[in-house]
Length: 361
Image (tube, rainbow, N blue to C red; front, top):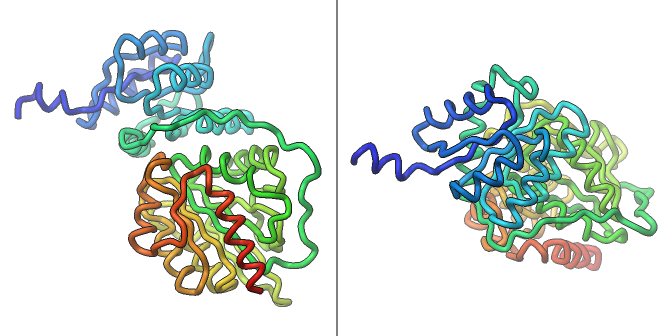
């Protein structure tokens, strides 16, 4: 194969960052990989929009914080006018920065990569594997039918934790594309849901706290980042903290409680869904409804198999609405499912299967 033919097969990328140094470093990382070809760079959002129109790149890396037109605003224009897979680069070290990154994911960005040491990261090479992995995933992303989410804060009375420990649970696993999916699912779970809800989203520490806060503002159920030794109650959503596995055990009085730990990553991630799913099958047996949503890899597949073997129910997101079909496909192949549903039907299906648990007990 000629070098020209090999180059033609590489995915083209537009690199957007207000720092000339960062544009060069990112370009060098991508070009050295041999998988991607940088066709242009842009210094702010306005420049990015012009370059997307002129160059029509396959993929875009987009800095969050930029002058004139920032990454969030530029992303909104890109996804509404000329949609394509976008990976955000975030220097977020504060809750507002985390919130902006999560908003980008709700607007349609496929994934984000955290700059290791601030806006100008001299050590970006530390996350080069992560950046390349995010772009590989973005190149496989399904953007058909993508719609931007406009969050609306919940109105009316909020759910109150049930006074007794949970007897039924819902578990949700997701990765790439997960924050968008969760913003479609969690706010549509009713305040009367007679179960505790657990969420494992593959995400670094810090971002999961902001994720829980954003979902809490949108949801009739209370949503918090889980704490170690916390008791588990119905009508409450517990988000696994970034960097820690979450499991459920029985306390001395039989009340289910949360255990967080720093044991090795599973499938390369921590938190992972499989440890949570297995613990739920052990503690709650058939009183579990588990859901595997969009994401790369196969986390959740083995856990879903264990849950269904214990008599619990399984929901898998369909291919058509999954940003990345890896996790749902692996779960379906290994564990099967009671329901295969589109993203906009996931919440209603959870309610339906949970109601069946209530009637069975």
